[in-house]
Image 1 (cartoon, rainbow, N blue to C red):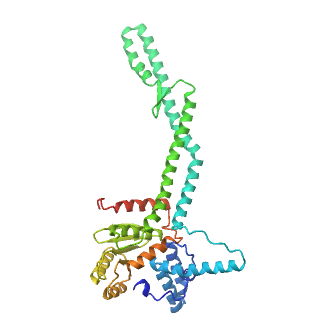
Image 2 (tube, rainbow, N blue to C red):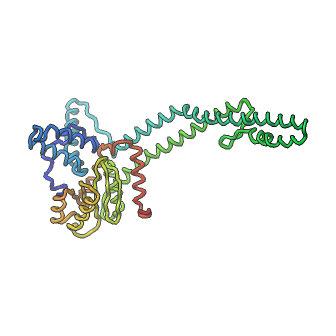
Length: 380
């Protein structure tokens, strides 16, 4: 069933029905569905009608494309109602320009700011850690030097009584020569200089600051990559775009909606995503010609069966044939045309979706690594 043939949303605000907000993650939607079903299912005293509405809400919100279409209907109506109410109070002001992908970007920026503050506040602690190592090794070197001097003096004294014993002075003498200085990161310090410890403390402070700033620089790079994601995904799915770009665009869009990409098969044109619990398979076809036939959809179904995946999506530029569409619907595979995909992508970027749950910076790193691995020049 195509996006345009789903019969609208029957006037149901799916978020309201599940008791969650529009910025809910995939996991929060799933948890809300399970929780509400405990009260609405006929087996626990609910009704068929109530459970059907809950099932419908989950069906819509668990489909990235249908969810965005749903959001466009209800969130836009809520915003319009708010503007109208504000205008009545004479305090309405035009809304600022929308920030594309602001849910994920906001999470990345907030986490970077948080970790940056933590790192800078912990600079002194890191200084003490580095200095404690320097001080330990410095004291060890000084102790060896002093013991070597004592050994040297004893050998020299013994030589006055028995000349052959002079040869014994070579060993402590060499040790004293080697241990007379302590080397830290290329700098040399005389072990008996009382100022050396203070100089090492200043060196440790510089080292800690450099180390922290280097980590902070890496964190800032995550923000830059998150901003580039939006640019990467904004290009429309025109017919002149290659399939690799289509695949990358799909990976970014599903990521923004809360799915982590986990596998990519260029030959089969299949991407696999995870919502933290279950896998989702996405097959795409971007070429001219007639609608995709049943055989093309069956290959996706076979892949899903082999990998234990229950949810599938098909994006085909010309759409599916009637028989292929019926086969897809019978096997729980949602399918969309290039036009559906293009408009969905554009609207997805204007949403406030939070992206995958968990450590957002770690997830951003995983996505960057995945996208790099999709490079045709990389070995698969």
